[in-house]
Image 1 (spheres, one colour):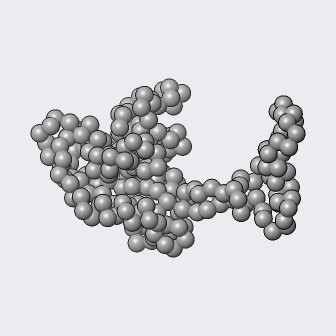
Image 2: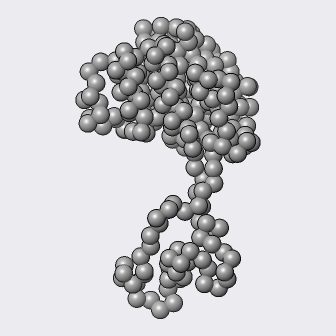
Length: 233
């Protein structure tokens, strides 16, 4: 079976994003050796919010174009002599249910529920006509003091991924059950339960940290004594 590398795409450093998908993938693959992956084929899955509603996002379209133009890719393992063939794909469905497309994974949401704000005086502001007071009033009341139709969610919003982390974790466990080895590229601690579950199932996990100087916190890494291999992207 091909060796799987699962990439939490939004967790990649922006400087690496700018260097392109081939750079990111080769940076990971070039750190592996044949004794670790036991195959000359690698499949890379990219996880992100690829659908806004039922429509593929512009970012996903651009990545798909890059995938079609650059993959399959032939590159070398860490010995600089063993060639592997790498394919890449957007993770738009679960490994275990490849025909069931998961949409609406990128959403625009309003301000978080329970958002609180301090009056400027509380934090020491004594300026008459402080513009922050207007912002405080807007957030506190939930509407503009000058008109009745502008709401907080009309001005402040966030775009976020949904389902993505759970998709990746589900795939980690599915691959652990079937293949007994995989790589995950992310520095997000939210994936540690999936890593720990995989190891408990007898799977080898190659964990690539994406942040410079980042290591798995010892209060997590000390939970495992074998089958866990940390690398840095």
